Every structure is written in structure tokens, then in C-alpha cells.
Image 1: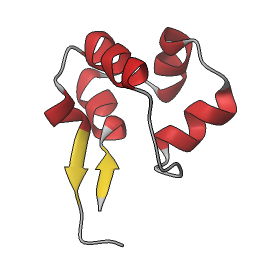
Image 2: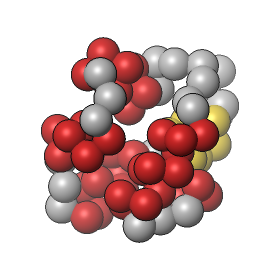
Image 3: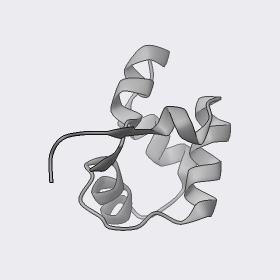
Image 4: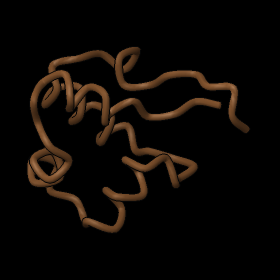
Length: 68
């Protein structure tokens, strides 16, 4: 299963979920679902924004897990 790895990236950079939420400027409900891997899709613009904000690549944002 492909999952968003943002929590780890935030921890490595010493930033909080709230900080990222404010940077992205999206609704808290959608942000929370996305960060907690409770959504089935993420807009390309949000992926791009997270990459720019966190100074990473899409490869850094996502991980594969054994969970289904």
C-alpha cells in the first residue's frame, strides 16, 4: 500500500503538522485526512506544494507498506 510519509519528514525538519497545515492553506478536514492516510487521492498541486515546502521529492513523500 502506498502511504504518505509526511509525519516522518516533519519530525526530521523539526516542524509540526499545524505548521504544514498553515503553509498549505487547505481545509483542516481535508488536510487531516490526507496526513493520516485516510484518503484515496491527493491532488498533484498538493503533492507539488508539499515538495516545495518540505524541500523534498515525491519519492520522499511516499512509502510502500505491507498493509492493505
